[in-house]
Image (cartoon, rainbow, N blue to C red; front, top):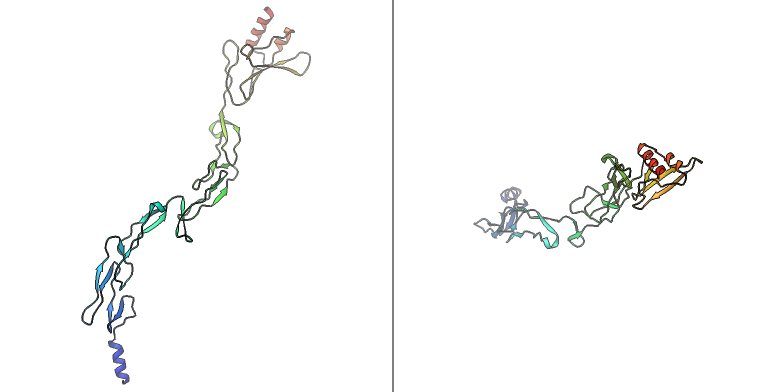
Length: 266
């Protein structure tokens, strides 16, 4: 061949290096576009015959395949859910359901790591990624084993106008109680129910709600203490042999002076 004939031959030969073409029977033919497959190849006188993909099928590239590809199945029994239905040119997308992550080693979804009490899930949680557990810092707690929950902050009793009776830990919240002063009925007996200790009119109510009556002796700086735990003496001063001590009852108010007068008259 002369150089001129070789150059002319290269000019009339169709390009088949493109992703949209293929060579068959000595000629360059067009491939099938995405969303279709090739039911018949080209001939010397005809082009390729392409057909659309059927239901639940797709083809995402220019091709010369004799059938389309099947969409993947998002099997709920394998902890998969559909995140994109896909179409004839795009494959359906699946992801692991909440609480699971994708593991390339088994090509499957695996349950996320469960954080023990005292630990919380580090946020933000990434889809298809295993959870990361972190210890609850001071002021926070987690009382459950969970693969989704983060540490929660302690309840602020003061902000609620309440008293803190049990401090919080990394596994439990603080325990709060309402502040309640003991009631004083007309008969002078003191009643009430409280979770804290209060001092009122010479009486101390302890954690259990028992009433402790305090007397101050005239002869020393130390106080004599009597506890009232029965129905007969709860909230009532205990009679002393030396009646003058009754009149020195700590927190001596008018109602206790009247009580002392009753004791004197007995």
